[in-house]
Image: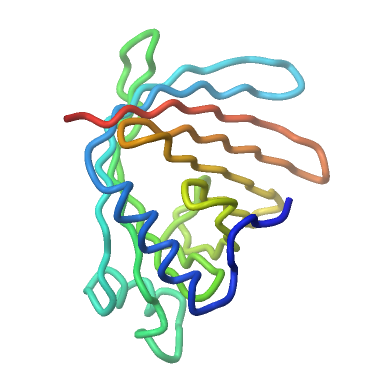
Length: 179
């Protein structure tokens, strides 16, 4: 899939910074994970807080150090996401945590991955001004994610996890901004 908006390095930082700024706030997330090929499902609800990270802030400097970047100021902006999740059916608490992203060109340097506490790097592009697409690989799996802002109050997300060329899980999310 090709990006539909300008992808030159100077404009990418501005485009993703704008996207991250528009994502700032408190969100309620309802999601469903489908395990493939069995089709088992798990429903999860989360309260999410999204923050914008300015260039040179301590969080971005920490990410640069985790990734051993020569120049920590290469990270032009970033985002911090904090969550509390529970099983939607049972109400059982599942996880709490946070993750941070730092942007350099078309790379997102993350302090942790979706399924690992270790730092990972994801390649990204903007499909359009409202849609961020990510791709990363680690621990033998590939992770593809699309996050789309819909107006001011909604986001949709889809995550596809593959291993050895076979899709193993699909996560679909609807997130509503909490006023």
